[in-house]
Image 1 (cartoon, rainbow, N blue to C red):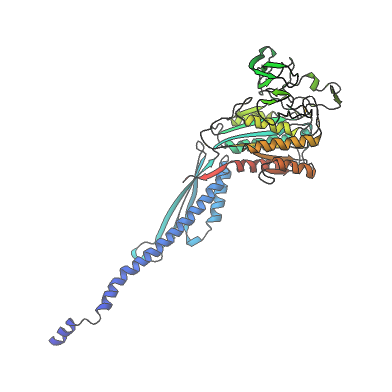
Image 2 (tube, rainbow, N blue to C red; image 1 turned 45 degrees about the horizontal axis):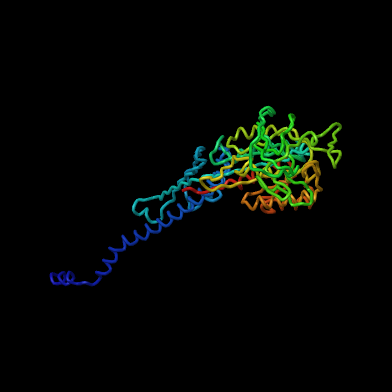
Amino acid sequence: MFRLFRRLFRSEEGSNLAYTAFIAIPLIGAVGVGTDAGRGYMLRAKLSQALDSAALAGAHKTHDNTEMESDVRQFFNANFPAGYMDATITGPTFSYDSDEDKITVTASASIPTSFMRIFGHQTISVSASTEVTRQTNYMDVVMSIDMSGSMSSSAPGGGSRISGARTAAKLLVDHLFGDLNTSELLKVAVVPWNGKVNVTVNGTPYNPGSNNTTTVDSFTNPLTSATQNIVYNTNHSPVPLLSAPPNNWSGCVYARFKDNGVDDDADHVDGSVAHANGDWVAWEPVGAEGEPKSPGVCTASPYSWDECTPCLNKGIYALASNKNQVKAYINGLTQPTGTTNIAQGLMWAARVLSPEAPFTEADPDPDGPRTQAIVLLTDGSHVRDYGDAYKRRLNTSELDARLRLIASNIKAKGILVYTIQFANGGGSSQEQLMKDVASEPNSPYYHFAPTSSELASVFIAISKHLSKLRISK
């Protein structure tokens, strides 16, 4: 018996099996930990993806916390469906920082383990957080709004066209500013127009006694051919004038174009333009000869016809950064009248965006990237009127050609142009004209809005296109 036990003790048969059994326990544990860790990584990646989508969706509604919460949950649930990996979800929760225009969305999730429960770990828990900042960089936006007489007509679906335009314009302002009333990054302007543009600063009454002159380099007046070294200024407009306005000046100026067969068009640029037949260093005020006369006839040699557009009672709202003030101005757009000169409305919108005189509210050297855009709204097509050229009127094809030229020059400067044909489609030729004017011939740059409700949707779509979003973390 003693010899038997001694022989068994000295035998090495079966030792490898014992060693293998000893090593198998930690090896299986390591494989199990790796498997569960991989599942945890997949869970966190899916959670982060769902949060990113939810935050981006919610950021579109940062001016409305209720809508933001709804969109956050809707997009999170769509991207992290119930039952995924048998996960239990806590959240998502969100917070909104109105000062930085930033939304933060957080959630956590847990799943049962497969192998780690051998070591007493029943679940794996992960969490993730996403921040999204609505990034507008620096942005200057001008709304160029048709105030011709047809805008007082009924819009399909109810209400007047101008009422629908006011509602839609305020929606764009609300969306761009969000919860902020003022923003160092955003400036908004409004240019109302009909056959003319009132170039005064809105809200400032005219005081003829405060008019003065400014000495400039000698130039040839393109209207009189006389040599001149002064321009005229009023107390309520930054626009220099070639002659002193009358005491009852309404605030409109003639186009800088004589329609005389000579290349002396200066309407497509901002400031001074020198030509062989005269230098356009300023504008000529529209006096009584260009305003309606009882019973509604404008008379000026060599033309006389039955319709003439009065100067609007609303001046330009120049670039500014106050949401409530620009909305209050929009509320005052209530008296559409006269004919339609889209070219004038677009050109003065571009001048408002330019840092060069006469309007200088645009920063000539912003600290960072800047987007400049014009949102042009009209419900009709060009109509001939006194003052399309200097004391002349052009036919509609000439006006269309000038509009295309002006739009081409504006877009060449990098300014985005959105065009909206509202209520009245105007036919295929008008549709093509507005597509040519826009930065691109399709959405988001060109739109046809047949009703006021669709117009509101268009303005929201444009504001979303302008509001660029970025993931900050």
